[in-house]
Length: 103
Image (cartoon, rainbow, N blue to C red; front, top):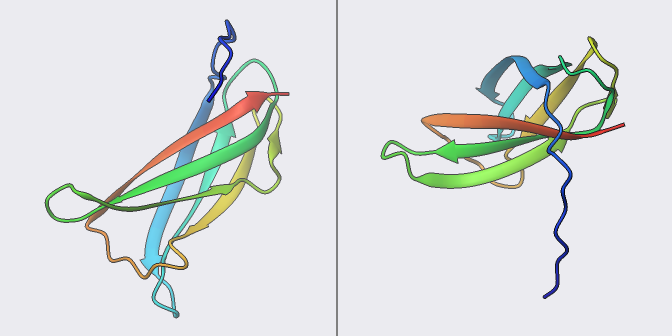
C-alpha cells in the first residue's frame, strides 16, 4: 500500500439544508434532501454519505450518492436521493455527511 501526504485542506462550505426519510414501496430506506454550497468556491463531486443505526446506536449499514447535478456554484443548492438498496434496512436513526472538491 502506498500513499502521499498532502497539504490540501478539505473543501468546506457544503451544508445539508433539508432531508426526509421513508421506506419506499420496495422496502428500502430512502432519503431525499438538498445540499447548499455556502463556501467561497464552486464545488464538484458532491457526495452524501449515510450511516444507519439500530436501537443500540450500532451501525447496521452505510450508503452514498451524489447530488444531481454534481457541481454546485457558490450560493446554489442541488438535490440528492439516497437509498439503502440492495439492503432492506429499518434504521432507528441515521447520520448524513457531505463532502466535495473545489471546482
